[in-house]
Amino acid sequence: MGFEKDEASSSSHVLSIPKEDTPLLGKTQHLSSPSKTFANVFIAIVGAGVLGLPYTFKRTGWVLGSIMLFSVAFLTYYCMMLLVYSRRRIESQLKAAKVSSFGDLGFAVCGPVGRFAVDAMIVLSQAGFCISYLIFVANTLAYLFNYSITKPDPTILGFSPKSVYIWSCFPFQLGLNSIPTLTLLAPLSIFADIVDLGAMGVVMVEDVMIYLTNRPVLEMFGGFNVFFYGLGVAVYAFEGIGMVLPLESETRDKDKFGKILGLAMAFISLMFGAFGILGYFAFGEDTKDIITTNLGQGLLSSLVQIGLCINLFLTFPLMMNPVYEVMERRFCEGSYCLWIRWLVVLAVTFVALVVPNFADFLSLVGSSVCIILGFVLPALFHLIVFKDELSWHGLAFDSALIVMGTVFAVYGTSSSLMEILAKKA
Image 1 (cartoon, rainbow, N blue to C red):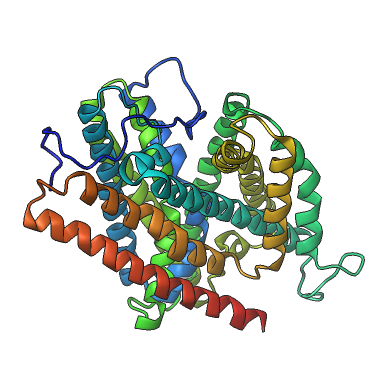
Image 2 (cartoon, helix red, strand yellow; image 1 turned 90 degrees about the horizontal axis):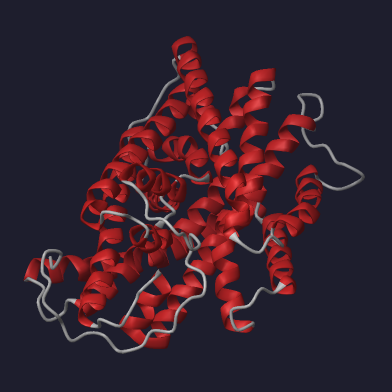
């Protein structure tokens, strides 16, 4: 499909690519070993999306949900490699060009329009991830500290607990998001990932114990009406497409990057599948949109949920960094701008306040910008770069990704919006 060939093609629009001042992972002085590259891929992909998988498996059925999850994992890996091979072709064709990021590739292939499309999708997707983080933190804290059997719909000073907790996060996020560089945020990232892995491990063990006791009735396949819902959440779960080019740039042995990425994606997809299936098997039709709220309010459960809240709270500024890079490059000539950062945090907070359901929002973001960013744009860029040498099946596969991705994005976005609006009504 064009992956193996090194001949030059005539697809690039530019000879000089305006550089992004900060790649999505920040600048590093040392290239990464295979083990560090594996770890970086893991960190870039694993996020809050996994917490909505058990509820998604309840909606889609565990067999259909698993098929969709592994299919999306394979297509995500394939499209990541499309970006890598497109970047390599452009750099080999234009010796002076250095494509550091997804946005650079968009400019090299499609000019300013390509750069703008990538920038817009990255801003929407990364901000969407952070909105889901705030929703998760607020709903989880409200469940732990406010909801009870005798008082299922409490208020705090006349306001809903969710809104109070979201606004309580706001001043602290202003401070964290004022930190100018990823380097200074690196310790937060490491701590957040350790907490995340530990919490997921505890949840999966609890799921097994509960399943062995309850053995609820399970469905293998849901109806067609939930197909796009499940697709959106699955796409959201693999959220690292914007990081793949910086990751490949930082890899010491570039020839092994595809194998390392494939192993990491296989491991992550197996972990995601196990987490989703075990959560659904444990609670069946009682599975909630945030699986941790199914665990009750005991000490261990509370510690796990608080740990996940800490993880996502600290991950928020890391995931917003690409948004600030784009906004500051476009409006402040690439220099640090505090007021832009604070305005973006405020906008994200307002959206989190009006979204009612965590899993529904995952589906909305996954069905819209994540499908375009993860499948449509990589296939389009690859098709343009290799248009003179693709075989018929390579041409057909790229074209199918573009067409089907666009159709799925339009239909899935409308379905998710109708689901959210119906629940608000």
